[in-house]
Length: 129
Image (cartoon, rainbow, N blue to C red):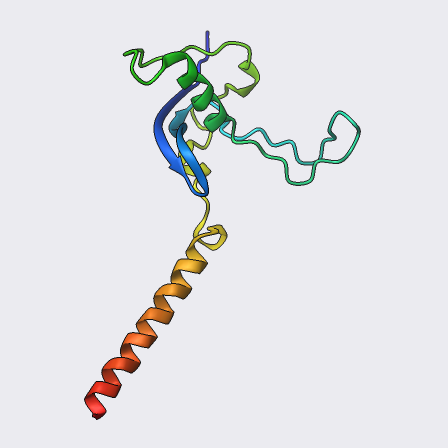
């Protein structure tokens, strides 16, 4: 029996970078991360936080082959059979950061709260006048 992994991708913009790249928005039968934590790099240094999102990397690489305007919706990737697994593997939903780890949530929440408080104070001042 042959096992294949499938990645569905779409073009997305990125914070702090110009341009767009394809990223995984769906995945089945493939490890979306390659967890290298606990191993060492080529120089023997320990890898502590290295966990590439290979689903996004593959999505970007295949977009180079498919192109945006060539009408080629599919690309086949060979040579990474180690990433293929069962359909029970976590899909692309596991790539999205949990709210408590979202690097933008805190800033926007603080900005919203500050603006809300300022508006509330202004409306109270108007009511008192």
